[in-house]
Image (spheres, rainbow, N blue to C red):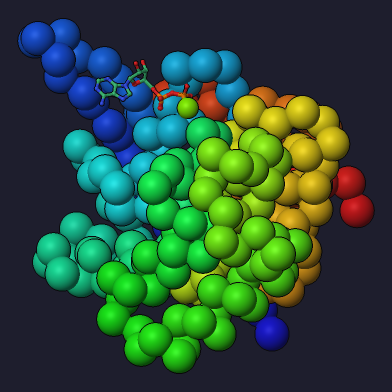
Amino acid sequence: MSPRSIIQLDAIRKVFTTDEVETHALSDIHLEIQEGEFISIAGPSGCGKSTLLSILGLLDTPTHGRYTLNGKPVAGLNLSERARIRNHEIGFIFQSFNLIGDLTVYENVELPLVYRGLPLGERRTRVMEALEEVGMSHRSKHLPSQLSGGQQQRVAVARAVGGRPSILLADEPTGNLDSTNGDAVMDLLKELHRRGSTICMVTHDQRFAQHADRTIHLFDGRVVEESFAKA
Ligand code: ADP
Ligand code: MG
């Protein structure tokens, strides 16, 4: 079966205007991602990596250009269609975990499924499956503050995959972790990829980037190089 294009960016630009000062965060980005691909995005601080991920995840909109997701132009979607895609199709993992401090591990993973209106029984099955998968089911009643950073990030991975998204976006997911915990989170992402997830991960760490099928190198908001994994 030939791979299917899941994401297509054509001439994407993003300009932020603050106090009449323009920042060209992204300029003329062309990018096509196939279903099941594992992409890493590299480049120095401020080069537009997080902006690119936010646009891919429908958390932000481009100033110019065309984003086609699953064959549909994103610009043509109304607010509720955008929200549906964010809730159903996309899982996000952040550098700083972004768990909700006064919810338990279980409740954190459950929350996006509540937003989706899944019934209680199905939520319970999915939450426990996701926690099992990341090795955190024995911590389901803990609060995030009672966990190490590595454990919190594993919970964040469970939250992202509990909705069975078709695309996983990770913004420096190992950036706040020591190398052992970073390896553990990376192993989880590799396993998800092996099982067919499409993953787009920003990382500074060459050690982790080498696990990707392809690395997109950004500089000053432009793609300056693409490198492919050695076969
Ligand atoms: P990276 O993730 O590669 O460090 P970002 O995508 O966060 O880079 O930022 C790219 C550029 O856009 C930077 O110059 C940053 O200051 C600017 N930027 C990002 N978000 C905003 C915003 N909400 N408002 C204004 N400027 C922004
Ligand atoms: Mg960033």
